[in-house]
Image (tube, rainbow, N blue to C red):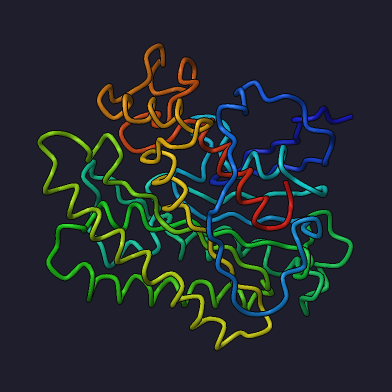
Length: 331
């Protein structure tokens, strides 16, 4: 029998699959009192009827390092195992360094440029599941252990960080480059729709200008360029979903405002419950990594926002999962 946080985890060549049942949530070892507050986070929704979080039994996740488990449990893990309102099987195709599309942008400042972008996560990984839809014309869907039903399946997409980091300083990033990125993004999400997807959640970008990699005394110009690039990217997300709604009106198109959540947590010191994590987030900007953390891991990182120069700690991932589930009608 599965415990409260237990799951079945199978690793494949590029992705993982988790199945978890909803049970009474135990007190969190991450001291959730520090990481909980009344939220005014915005979630935009356009298109067909959203069936509700409790109706979801399958989750397909596409993304980059924020969506992988490289540094321990992430928000996708917590959505599946802690803030689920139903039994959920999650297939996580995310790959560190991934972009919407590797072609329009350059490698990021660490030289990372994954060929496993959204285009390839769909064509090379999700394609194995496309014909397993219970509404597929293929006979392999009905009764298959890994089959999925469009009405009870959520497709989560979180891309853009590596697209921005690779090319934010280029003169045409906010125009020509983003035109190409979002054209590819629309094509990829339409491909998923054509495969049977009907419930979509797109996550926008966090304010990386506040991350240790950019928020330093010598990085004022760099931070401003990153901020401008992220604002330009995020400004296109609602437009993207509105365009897709116009083409595929029977699907549910939602987006989650991660930028607002991060910005509010780091910068707003007015709410008592947020004061400690906000203070530590700013300290972490100077210290680069939490005292006591080893090799970039989460041990010793309790109470800190940033795990390293650009990634948040698992405590922040838990907050993110809780708020997404709440916005979707769950936790």
